[in-house]
Length: 161
Image (cartoon, rainbow, N blue to C red; front, side, top):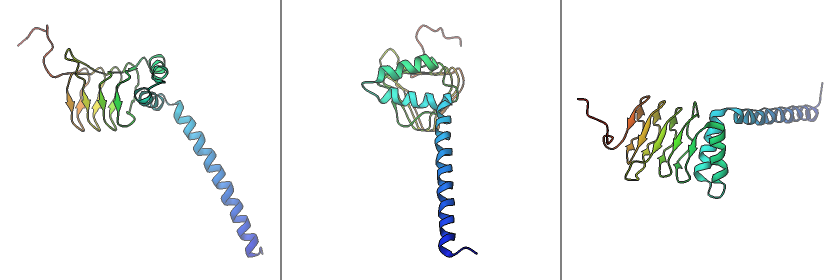
């Protein structure tokens, strides 16, 4: 029968081996998560909006990798959720809250007056939607696919009523 000190030595060695295996697994999981395009795009979008000197590098990466464009003055309160990060355009004055989900081909931009939208926390904007002008989307808003949301009717479009 092992003595008490031998028992604790074996237990300590087992704990160290377990911690080492756990750290290796966690680091592999972190690297694997960076291979996920949604997570990678979220990091690129956040960095492109926050970086001052390296903005061009992050923006070019977004354009090359995801055909998406994030202007320098865009502001993200937290990393966006991007299930399909292709074709997303975020204008320079746009403010995006936390936990906002943007699907593919979403455009957040300006109108003729130069105002940009403000997107509240937890908002979901579905595929091909356009949000423009000084629109304020409150927390939890859902914008349907192919919707055009703006402060006023588009000029030059005839009224069909």
